[in-house]
Length: 321
Image 1 (tube, rainbow, N blue to C red):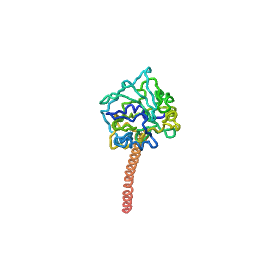
Image 2 (tube, rainbow, N blue to C red; image 1 turned 90 degrees about the vertical axis):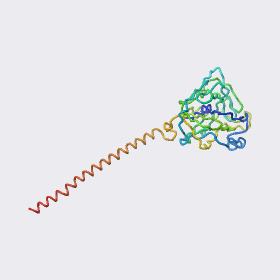
Image 3 (tube, rainbow, N blue to C red; image 1 turned 60 degrees about the vertical axis):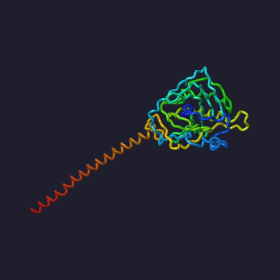
Image 4 (cartoon, rainbow, N blue to C red; image 1 turned 30 degrees about the horizontal axis):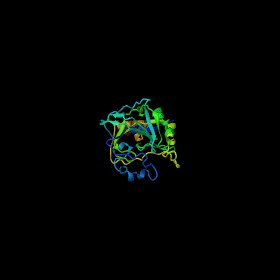
């Protein structure tokens, strides 16, 4: 059975640095999502993690503003031949797919090249691993109908089971991973969601979800480890997502009209139609009752005239007789 996911691996292709962010932590730097080096202590080593413009955030209706200048995005160089290869790596925090430098995105003021794709997920018991939320709702993973193209990545997870392992996989069209109608998206200024958390990211979050199968999600939740193959205390790679951050009174700009996004406000189309129909029926009932009362009142007035005057005339005639 397919499970709905917010477009997350795809989403991270569009996590764009607007300016040089400074050096990222070296490979193997000591930070994690839990424990003494977990998220709560990131700001001790990486001050930006406790600063402003942090991501991820909750995308709720109060902060959304339509922007007609947000044009459809173009994806150039995303259709990679199977003769070429991608490097898939377990970096101890996630599984990362390095992308060729000639991939770039059109529809922005500057040219941005896609550098890598990586994933975030929860665990088997609590599969709510998306970083960004929509109206307070988490999705099972952040990855950017069941999309078989993700198998081109997931079938190789066993080859990168432990930290530091990597494998070359055949090229394929990255555009296949995109959700339907990629011209509908959220846009805001934020940060990297991992150390050093530099606030230099232009986020593009697709509005429409992608679906993967239960088996694919289970592979993410069970196949990988944060530790090296010879580590005496292996740790499963689960819950590798940062919690939602304060939004600091920023706005999120959207490329679609918000009135069309009723499902994200918690109202389904069926509920809305039911309420509308009930309202129409209620008005009809009120009108019908009002007309009936008006006619009844008018009829009683007519009857009262007969009762008041006719007997009086009759009594007066008998008296004269």
